[in-house]
Length: 303
Picture 1 (cartoon, helix red, strand yellow):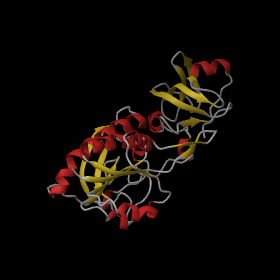
Picture 2 (cartoon, rainbow, N blue to C red; picture 1 turned 60 degrees about the vertical axis):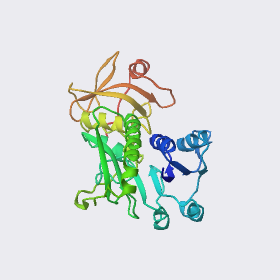
Picture 3 (cartoon, helix red, strand yellow; picture 1 turned 60 degrees about the horizontal axis):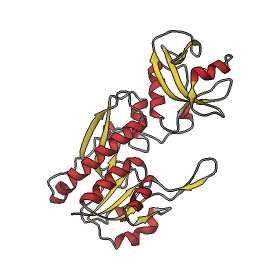
Picture 4 (cartoon, rainbow, N blue to C red; picture 1 turned 90 degrees about the vertical axis):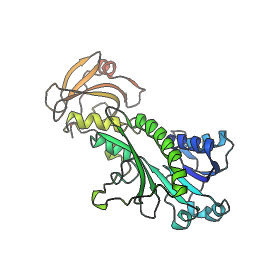
């Protein structure tokens, strides 16, 4: 049974935390500080904090990880395990464990180093993604790889893949820790010539440009679901899109080809896209054909 300091913040990290608690000794859980959420700015804990407290674990929430270095030294861990923690670890902390500081990164490294690997894989129309178990080094997601497991992307959203990859990460860490401890699972350096990056999603990434192909637009919508959501600019304000499908109907980009019970079919740079559900400005989630019935002058910004 290994002694482990766990670091993580979002839902993706919870299966790994639960698996480690069940099979090893989790000495402490490090997660991001509570953050204001929503229009009322309600101070909200990370999902990992909630899960850790439910299991009676010690939770530490540093604004900067460097400030708790001495506190972490007292634990004398065998491993540090991270899963989407959200802060860079200095070398002094990376070197604390008896064996390794490990990270469960949601991509097939060396592709998609950075903060939005799942979203970028979907947006780039990749066929597969996965989880890479790597040794953490000072450089972002650049450490040697112990093992990679993969899954197909198909028509999955980021939310759906987060759940799937979270479960895969938990299985991967459990099957690897003992082998690493014994020295029978060795890391392999990444091929630097194959490196790509996955920067965090910006506001500009959220805008849907109807000049793009329908396949690219549908992928962007899935990549940004369940949040922050991709949106179309219209003469009635932005509409965040929840569900969409590729259609082969043709028209001038931005043209509304037809409106049916299934949604609004809008022409794109290649083909068209059927917009089923969305959140118009100032409204709640609704079927977009219903929105159209009250806004028949609806026009989409093509830029």
